[in-house]
Each structure stands twice: as structure tokens, then as C-alpha cells.
Length: 627
Image (cartoon, rainbow, N blue to C red):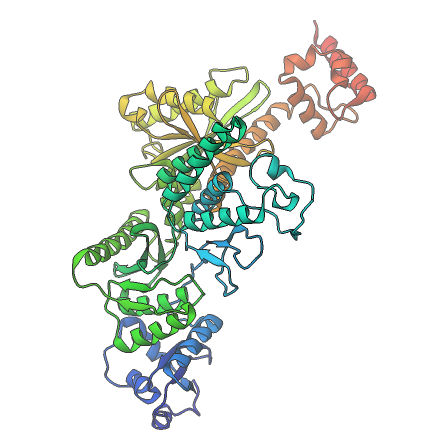
């Protein structure tokens, strides 16, 4: 407590000017930062009988002193407030903690030979920006389409007007026009740049027409190789049109914002409307924000989100009506950042009101899912990853319970499997299960997976303790073969269990998670590459790694138990590592007993000398055991 600070006396000294005020707590830490059109009126309102949200009421009870900074204008106060909130992150301000910065597409029209790329910041550098896009995966698919349809240079090397450099691999595979080597004239290159800008603005008809004209012209000149290139680009364009909606900011574009609350938490949902379509959407969570006024959350969000130089649309609609004082100040700030007018409004009727209600409904759905998942007041962020997984796998419901399976073996011995469980995106180790394969004495991952799934879901059908939960998703470590084995096992139990969704987790040649195998029907499967979806890649990788870790740990225990008292004990120079290597190489005790000295020497890490000692020991022991 600051005994030297008399709040009532200090309130009398407050000026009739705009500015920023900072509230200090018990340990003199800054607990709240706010801005005011008139400091005297705003700061005094905290210490009189003015209605406040429960959140602010608690904050007021902890104020020990305040300070303030006088500004020349309300706009200047708004900018200072935003900077101080970012710097101090006060406990009682609404903080945009999960603002990761949306990706944008940048066309470097400020360069002589423009390029196209993904960026996280919009800068006033003369380049042309498109976005924001709601995911990196969306941007990557857009850039991939551009490379195939309208290739521009991918490198940042300095291009000389009389370019005579050697072409790179990108030119040979059709992803670069070879401007550095003079393979395309500057005028033609700039026509492609113009088409790229048109493409990103949502105009694909003109591009399609020009590509078709070039294809026909090449065919008429009997240049069938180039005609095939243009035909391929037309096919790529057609696929892209079906799967994506391009985003840009023009006068018809706007964002729609609404807040959902459940008494505990709050979620703000934003829809990005570009060229008349919902091009993307995102939500932001505010744990413990259930007792805040919706306008408090909305105002704080707009200041922090768009204050980070986001590509600001000409209009931002909010479901909640904002106080005029706040609205006009924010409009001035965003208009200055944008360089053009930006309006903030609340729709009262018509289609925009219906959209605002839909955005609010989506925010409430996020909260309902969090409640089902048991995440209120905790990591609601997990739901973003699970919702992304739901979209990719085209599931009807949120995958709140995930089971993942992996097979581990040591040659043809110690074959076992793991079942790990993720609840609401978090590993639930109390639900993990281990299986020792009973029906096989040879290595067969497909048959092993079929046995494990049969045993697990037969016990579900029987109502066995610990097996009664029905998973929303089943992940199998492996590719199409493993997925088919799992589907076969489920189909043999009953029709309801056969309907459970099964997907594969495939690894690359470096044993890292690469993709999800998605069944389309009985015979067709698609592969979803995860490298373009980093957040989902990280999550699926953690599921696959956990299933593998649990399986391999059990396998090691079984193996150690098996050879702890074995024929290889007490051999000079043969320790635990060499014993494990021998068992892993031969797979069984019988195979070790029947091995020749040369075969033992072929085991990595053994060598001829040690092999002779091991062979003599095994055969000597065998002779001593004979009657």
C-alpha cells in the first residue's frame, strides 16, 4: 500500500485534457492502462458509484495509486495506450494473447522484376499486399497454384536487363520463366505480374481466357509442347477455383466481429468478407472474460489486432454497439494506419445483421465445444487445432477423443502394440493401453494391427472396464495397408463400430510424421501433406510420437525380461548392448542356438573374435545340458 498517495486529493488535480492513465496495484505493478478524452472525468468515474463490470470492480479494489500522461489529442492518447498495454501487459486489461499475426501474400511491385511471397507484416514499402488469410495452408495452396499457372521468379538475385545467367532447376520444371537468362522479355514478364495481381484480386476469368488463347495459338503453330504446358495450367486453375476463394481488400470488403460469452470465458469471432464471400474466419479466446462487457472485449481487440498493421478493410462491423467516444477514436487511428477512411458500424437490419448473428452463434459454438471438452477457463486454444483437424478429415463432430495405435516388435519376437488416448487435444495417460500380440510368432504389422483393433473393440462391445469410451477418431501408425487392416477389424465386429473414422499417420524416409492417409471409399485413399499446415503437423506428430514411444518402451521391457537370464549371460566381453544386438538380429533364442560362427560375426558390433567366444560358449553350454 502506498501510504503517501492520497487518491482523493490526487483526483482533484486531474486536468481537463486527453491522456492515458495507469493504475498501480499492491506491489506498485501496473494493473490497468486506459485512455480518456478528458482525464478528470474518466479517472474519477472509477471511484464513484458508477456501474462497472465485475472484472473492473475487482481491479478498482486493488488500486493503490495512479499516474497519467497528458496528450495533445484523443488520437495520440489512443496510440500511447496501445503501446503501454503491449509493453506492460496489465493484469486487468483485455489482452490479445493468442494474436499470432495473420499471413499475407505480398507481390513486390516495388521491384523492377516483382516476386510473390508470404509475409506476416504489412509494410508501407510500395509493394502490393493481399489478405489476411486465415491459415498458412491456404496461402501455400494459393502460392502453389500461382507457381503452376502464372510463374514468376522465385529467387531474390539481382536481375540484369541484358540477363544472360544460367537457368536454374525451377526454370526446367516450369516454376520460373527464366527472366535472369533472357528466356522471357521484360514486357511479357510484367504482363504475367499484372495477371498475378488480377488473380489475387479474384479475377480468374480473364486469366483463363488468356491461357486458353495461348494454348490454342501454340497448337496452331504446332508447338505442342508449350500447348501442353498451357493446358496443364488451365487444369490447375480449374482445380484451384473449386477449392479456394481468393482474398483482397477493396471497397466492397469488410470484417464482421461478434463476441460470445458463457459466464466464465469469452470468445471473439471474426469473419473476413472479401469480394462478397467469407474468405476466412478466426476466433480469439479470453479465459475468464465471461463477466466483461462485450464492448470492452471488442474495443480492446480492434485496437490490438488492427494496430499491428493488419491489412485494414474500409469497414469493420461489430455485433455490439460501441460507445461513440471509443468508436470515433479507433476510426481515426485505423484510418491513419490504412491511409484511407475506415468506418466502424453495427448492423441493425438486413443481411449484415443476419451475418453478425451467425458470427455470434459461431463464437458461442466454440464456447460450447470448450465446455464439452472441459476446457472452460483453461486452454481453449486446443480447440483451434481440433477444429482444424475436423475440417481436414471432414468429420461431423469435433474430435475430442482420439485413439492412436502403433505396433512394435523385435524381429519375430516380442510383438506388442500401444493404444494412446488424447482428450480435448491433451494426452490422457491414465487411458493408455498395451497389448501383447497373441496370434502371431512372425513379423506382420497388418495382422498385428487387425488383432489389436479386434481385441480393443470387442471389449468395447462387451462393456469391459476401461474400454467403454467410444473414440471420435482412430489414428493408425502407418499407411494404407495399416488403415485397411484396422477397417477390416472394425467391420468384423459390428456395423456401428465399422463406422468409426480411421486414418493413417505416415512417416517420411527420415522417420518423421509426413501426412495423414484419408480413406475416400473402399478402394481410394488421399494423402494430406502436413508440412503446409504447421499447427496440425505439430499436433499429429505429437500423437504419432507418443504412440511410438509407449509401444517401444513396452517392447524394451519385454525384451529385457526375455534375455535377462539367457544363454548369452556370463560371456566375457558381451554386455547388455551386444546381447540386445544379437537378439534383434536373430529374433529368437532358437535362431541364436542354430547360428554359425560366421553368422554371429555378421551382427553389427560383434566381430570375429567376439563371435568365436560367443559360439563356443553357446555350444559348450548346449553340450553340458545334453544327458
